[in-house]
Amino acid sequence: MQLAKTLSAYIARQFFTWFCSAFGAMVSVAFLADYLELLRRGGTRAQATWGVLLEMAALQLPQTAQKLMPFAILFGTMLAFWRLTRSNELVVARGAGVSVWGFLTPALIVALLIGIFAVTAFNPIAARMQSGYVRLESRILGTDSDPLALSNTALWLRQSDGAGGQIIMRGEKMSAPARLELRHVSLFFLSQRDAFAGRIEAKTAQLDHGFWVFENGQRFTPGRPPGWFAEWRLPTRLTTNKIEESLASPDTMSFWQLPGFISLLERSGFSAQRHRLHFEALLARPLLFCAMVLVAATFSLRMQRAGGAVMLLVSGVAAGFLLYFLSDIVFALGLSARIPVVLAAWTPTGVSMIFGASMLLHLEDG
Image (cartoon, rainbow, N blue to C red; front, side, top):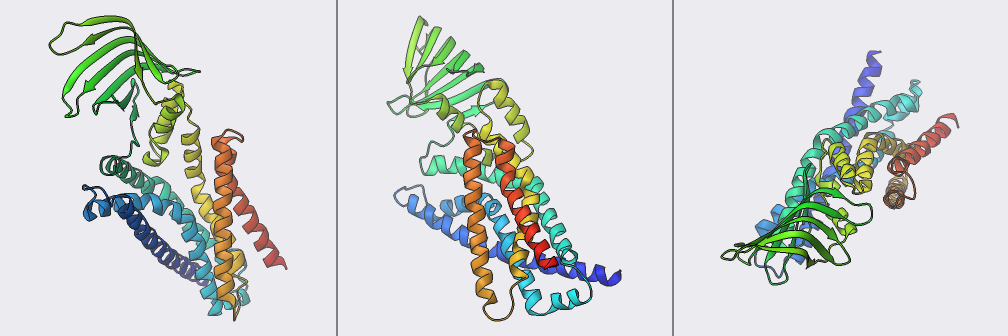
């Protein structure tokens, strides 16, 4: 019993060490690539100094790290078991009667714990930092990435007035079966210098083919008496689809915030497909990490002698790309509602788990 505990602790330590090494290397390369891309994008902008772009790259890094974690698990597992096989430590363990599942269990437990930590603790940090990155990107690089905000009582949006100023709009009681409608609408007009230039209060507003149509409202302009109108049109480039896409990105919301925001979206009449898919994918992540251990073990436990390292690398890269493309395909199908969200989110995990387990059973029995 003591020998089994010692072996399990040793394998778990080896797996975690190699995971950290692979994860650190991948994150370092990704950070450098992101920073170089930001330097390219900000090359013509005076505000985009090296320090600001470095801050943006640092804010984006945790979100990138989340995407790299499954592949770090994959490569870390392959390297750990390849090293144990090359040093004949696993050969000795097998000779002592330890099955393949006996020395895989510690790695599976560590992978599961890493997945739980990644979802419950690391994800909220990454979401908060990604939100900061989006704000900096909008201000420094001039992207209009977050013009909308949704609360329990109102929808807020912002658009240009065509003359360099800004229009901020607030509306309550949203409904969007076919055409977006807002009630108790307030518009605030700001000049180029963000000075107050006027206000409109309207009973309703509808988004209709490139226009906001305001009905039964009153316009207030500094230095002038209020003016009533039955209907007033404001040109806009927004559509209902663009509004849904611009509402808080799932990447900027933590695992703990997503259920409430999904409920809010559905009550407001907007599609919550993207957010549901993201939430289900986060739920599946700990088991996905375990599946990566099984997949990696099918390759690394077969690697022997000369040429093994090359085959290990090729097999790992191929498995990583297959997983990436499979995930992209099923996620796209889930977003388009061609398959259920739960099926789209859990398919990569399920396929990887079945493939890894079946190959290991064949290895153990054959």
